[in-house]
Length: 493
Image 1: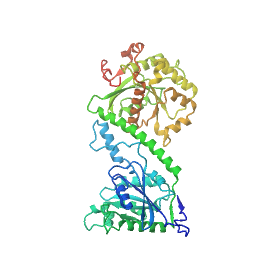
Image 2: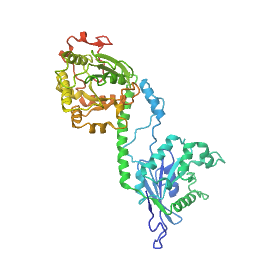
Image 3: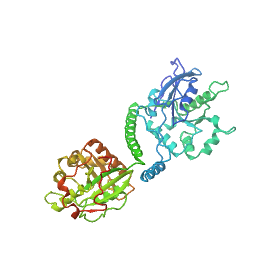
Image 4: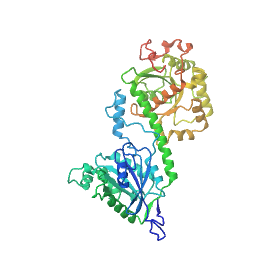
């Protein structure tokens, strides 16, 4: 949002000094922002040898006019979807990617938009610094667009592209040729800035023929005239909210990257094993969920499960063992046949020395009444004991029914009984779209949550098998492995 400039900006005769000009520098990594700021200021005000983590402000006078320059941290380059897909393929194949990983973001740094607060009431010009020595692709274009959007509406009319490193261009090669030859992404950026651009050679700071700073200020004055003397008004509240949201996203991204790093450390060694038991009512989609997690059709879905079935696959660098079980009655433990109750216990016994997680499958399309909730809890405690809640996670199936509705919003709409069930499970829950086995990226997130639960449980990492679960095990259960093939090699025991 823009605001009319102050009295001194409009040439009020009461003003004792020429109007101030405020410049905000934004740009990506290695764009040359800091060197450019020093060139404008005419001195080494900022340290160009280290990466900028917080916005800095400097002042100078150019032809008797006070100029404020704000240098900012580099904006984040969004991940390329193609790179993400390649990383996923490498992860699923159990191989490490050849491409270098981006370093994790630091919570000690701040977002570049916070620099706008340092030049109140707002910048006259937003200089988007782009190095001619760095590729400017669609990824960089999206990063620039996201940063301008974060500042608020109407920013483009105050923006100008400032090219750096033009001394690296071939002799006789003009910046206009570089814009034309680089591609559509850079051309879009220049056009979005109203075709306003300037070029800097930061190696010519003290030469007598150096007119690049005065020429830049002339272009800034032309832009201010075009904007009728207005400047971009900074809404500090919005920027602070944006910064809080950015830091929350960085915390989550750092957590995910730490999990990825831990997985990479296991590559080449014995895979970690996760032992999962699928539980729930009849017809809730347990078999489909098992297929979705394992990445292929191991269990027969669409028909009632009569016997426990154990299957195993390598998923995201882990050896995942899943046992599918027959479904319970919806309204009463007593109405669940004794054979089905025993089969549920024998399913846990197939996961020696015990299941890490009981996945309580619940369709997002089903409503949960008080009686249904009590029945689910009664089944878990009757079959597996009072401590089973420490190892239980609610897994919502049929996630495609949610559309764009976040699962948290669905939980709020689900009422108090659904919330009480999640509280019983320690608020561990996840949602899967079981229609696309092997293609749902949230499976990796699910396994991360299971490992988080295991760490939280400490020395009680799994639910130990009870003696009564082992009776007549072989006469009721179907398995794809030899009876002596248990899980004693698991590193998470």
